Length: 206
Image (tube, rainbow, N blue to C red; front, side, top):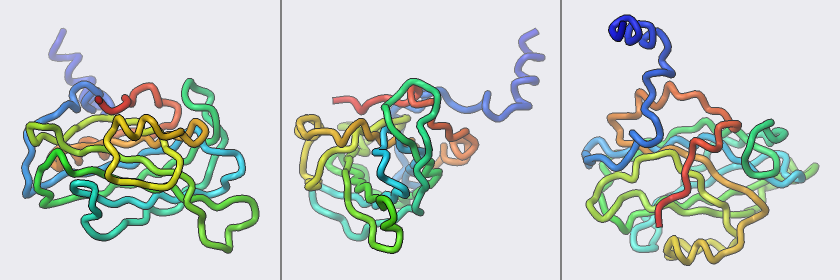
């Protein structure tokens, strides 16, 4: 009975989560803004013990002011699942971005820093970076589950996606995140963060 099935599914919040394709571009409320969920990293080098992500926004390739440091994450053995070869790290961080005017020239820029070997007492060293355009040409949030190859330094926020794809990847390192409208954030908070589910994330559209 359809009604019974719906009722049973309602007991498990994971059944209520939108599928990746439901997280497509949607009308944007500039007042409420958007939320970025940083889920995990895959393909990390074996010598990296801890990693930390520094995040910021750019408009037309220019920094809009201020970088945010996510909490350091311990590097873990690779999960027994398809995906990039190398260690993983669970970020499990969310970053609300309220009152952000929509524009196809606004990008998220992330720099990956790492501590290697016994160097925990020192400052982490920059290792790689990634960038993601946040809005499409219709000023809608590019909602979705995205996997971003981490590129070799130096960081250049003015690069287009095409130019980014021409920069060597650092090993097989990738950042896995979700980009959602603020109104969808409470539902997305229920999502399980699992580095074994890399296949549920897509590469950004060209």
